[in-house]
Image (cartoon, rainbow, N blue to C red; front, side):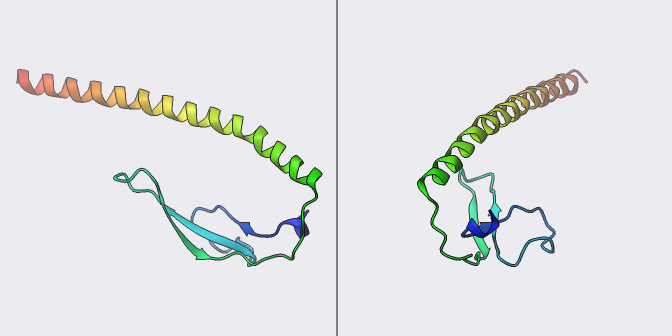
Length: 104
């Protein structure tokens, strides 16, 4: 399968030593002020030949991608619910702090 991948972009945290030379590197900066992240290309991927996927392999890749979407949507939903709970806790703590400070 490796020889069928035309371009590779890897996802990393900080250590660049484990990324293959053929892989491209994108830097994603999220800013709290903007809705969309800013993406900068640090290194372009090297093309790995001119393999043309047959239609049956294209459908297989699309099917696997579609299967993955459901799991990712569940993770996003859980993360959003967790963030809402944390926000409520912070808001309650701030309200309690203001009440306690006002009664001083």
